[in-house]
Length: 525
Ligand SMILES: Nc1ncnc2c1ncn2[C@@H]1O[C@H](COP(=O)(O)OP(=O)(O)O)[C@@H](O)[C@H]1O
Ligand SMILES: O=P(O)(O)O[C@H]1O[C@H](CO)[C@@H](O[C@H]2O[C@H](CO)[C@@H](O)[C@H](O)[C@H]2O)[C@H](O)[C@H]1O
Image (cartoon, rainbow, N blue to C red; front, side, top):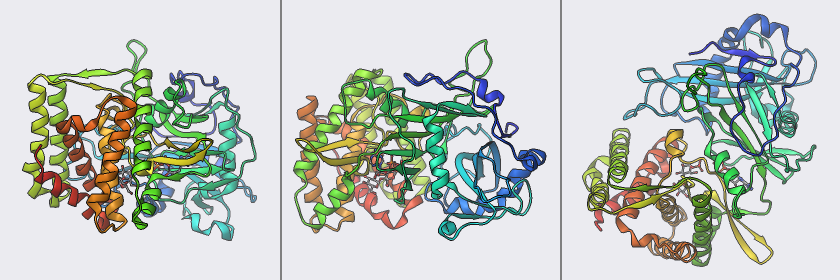
């Protein structure tokens, strides 16, 4: 673990070359902010020691905490940066940006190389982004944001809390994003053509999320990634690439920020001869807020509740998905999957099934039947079948699509290109068959029918699925149903993922993917 820094200005991390992200304003180094003497004197170890008891209680309760069900055995500070001075005695709040690793025992069935930065043989540790507000006392309206009062260290006697709930601090973040620059290991970048006004009122999105988002004046939304790893997050990379195409289905990033902490993340970005270079961690992306939109999940639930038809919406959604896929295939590298790659794909799915069954024993009875889906796929590869792989959304479901009324009618947009948050970043950024996204959306119709309590859930889902595939085929020229083995393997892989996801985050929803598992296990193409 590298020595942690409590940054009050430029650090060696800030002098590293900027990420190769196109079209952004060149950041400038800001002068160091006024520092807190006590913090400097106590150093990062004192800071972490004083925060650890509070964080070990608070962190596991957060929706975005990925290590649920396993004890936190320790913390390591990756970097700490004062965005606003924290130890002033007045009423002005301080703002402390932290990247912290939470050490935990590895989950059952864990595969090494999860991309979260821990090394083979080391204890599992995920890196989290935390924004701490610091005040002498909390005003009543911020009571729900309380994390606690450190009993020692540089913040001794002060109150620390979730900064995003404090409008003053959320406003400060937007101000930082409006002005490109560096602050210690943090680097703020923006799209030169984006017009980001100041003074937009912030509000934290309260919906259940894997990350945290703040809406500014119904004009912009800032997504802060919570579990972060070295490398450009596809939720920045893909929308930026799509912004350079004629595809307008995805909100274009207006500004973003990243961290290049010392000694962290050397890997893909290491350059020969120049020594290891840390891959910056993408920390947040600001993009236009699609005001007045409703997500597909809500629309589908409404349709199920009304026993209404969703086929027209699903058809249009299939077309929108195809448009985004075509644009990504034009904008970014594609590859061909031949026998070795198809066998590798099938083997990876099999491995994920075995890991999932180790974590969720309810999967055990279906393992052999589910494996047959992957064996059928591998057999096609051996028989000479090939497919194209391209960059995809990676976790497409009804909650990732927004519909709003624009001139000419209703229009779908796609958001959240992060991919499945539990998969390693390098895996998420690899070209894959586009059918992976389609399988995700097909699974989502199944979820909506089940969660919405439809009396004929399979009929409703079946009609929506057919309409979605037809819309996709119309816009792309490729009907996913023409590749039943590929589709079944991907649907199975997705349902297996969902079983683990639900077991970890929403055990009461586990029956939804489990019923799909039973159906998929009973189906052979
Ligand atoms: N550009 C946007 N316009 C309007 N709402 C958005 C936008 N981006 C995200 N949202 C809302 O915020 C929610 C969470 O965003 P998302 O990117 O899916 O975050 P997470 O990865 O944390 O789930 C979405 O379900 C949607 O309701
Ligand atoms: O939205 P995220 O990127 O955080 O995705 C994760 O959470 C999703 C749930 O919020 C989860 O999606 C599953 O539940 C959805 C209904 O809530 C359903 O529409 C999806 O089909 C189902 O997969 C997603 O898998 C997970 O990665």
